[in-house]
Image 1 (cartoon, rainbow, N blue to C red):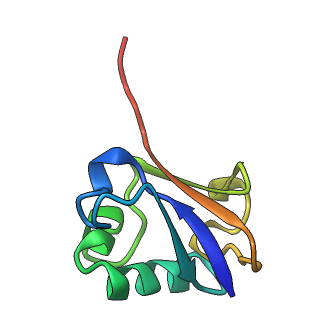
Image 2 (tube, rainbow, N blue to C red; image 1 turned 180 degrees about the horizontal axis):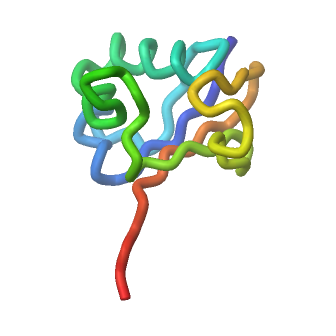
Length: 91
C-alpha cells in the first residue's frame, strides 16, 4: 500500500531534496524499513540503535500523533499521510 510521507527540511538531504515521497508499509516500522531501503541512512536519524523511535522526532498519521495511537505499530492504510516532525524547544 502506498503512503505519502512528508519529510522535514533537515532530512531532505537523504531523500534527494524531496519534501514528499511515496512509500510502502503496513505500519510505521515497515514504513521506516522501506524508507531506509530507498534512502539509506534516514532510519538512523529517526531511530536509535535499538530501533526505537527517537524522542525528539514526532510522527503523525493523518494529523494524529502516533504516541496516542499504537506508537511504531500504528497501522497504515493506502492513501494515508505520514508527517515526520522534529520536536522544537525554546523559550
